[in-house]
Length: 496
Image 1: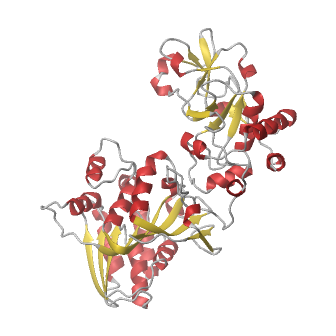
Image 2: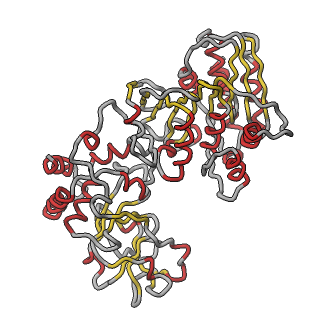
Image 3: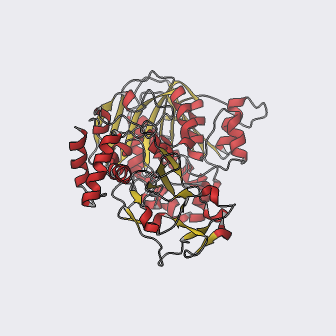
């Protein structure tokens, strides 16, 4: 039956236009992932299972869950499924997928074509005129839509009524589903890993941590394999939550891709998943049971603030200052730096082979966005998927700009500075080398699956002391190896 469900999924994916998929944020779950997700539910005695599949698509996830019920692997007498799917074009596929289980178990399926967010909020806030009777569920399985929610949209206002603040549909679905679970109800979802860090998703992280225990986290090493049929490059994670459960150790597993041939499973104490003193509630996903060096070494205990430094996002948003931008530098302008100006850890400016401007006019409107010329450690906010490291750091040197007194940094850059002033050359290079190290890359990957590196992420990183960074910077200045594999070896020697 699961093979038949997979055929239906492939047929539906081919028949639906990309416009239709984008409209609803649809990415259908492959059979291998659906089966793995269904396998994560505990087999506990339950007379009637009430399963919620929010954003059911063609029913692959419900089918995998029902497959366990048919085999007797989930112990129950009856199963009730509420499958929400707003796209009515998928209903024939959804019905065909689920109806094949009717003759094998006592099954009641309700396909609901209503907007899940609207319906769930009505259930949770007690709307007397709702179309469907509200209920709680014992189990939930979902691959929610991935689509941003505007701050002034109907969804944002509606979700606030239910006490949920988020910027994307997928955390909205997870938060609502969690609220509809009964005590000790289980939720298994495949969602983008982007919720694990970043300030935008902090309310969502705190929402789930206050209401559920994390039981399982699964990470795919390959970014583009989970939904390869839909060309999805977003890094995904599978998470299992228990509503109102007591938080214990978390089972973490990894695999290269959706075939799970190299599945690795281990347990991690919860205080290594969410650090007790972390106000941001970042969720770390280790790729091995061993702590990384930064965590276990007492030498790496300083934040940028402890070092007397700050990090800021580049203040120049080019589309807002178009009239002040210049293709090439001229009298009365300051250099304007974009990510494209940084290559192999250093600045190449001006560029003739880029469509980006190289300068910004200095006047009363722009001066507040500019920094005095000096040495700065620069980290690109977005790294390409081909980059070996998640964090790519470079150094700005004043000699790159002749007699320029001010510098402009575009919004896709992070600037490490000291009270909006430059750093010493040794400190700037020491910081850049440290941030480019494999040591930092391993640490950063534990809590970030994004190609984006935010200023908040850098504030939460731990650094060695200023003296170690300066000594590292002196070594870099003498060797020119700001992005060399030898940085880790040198760093470990300095930190001992």
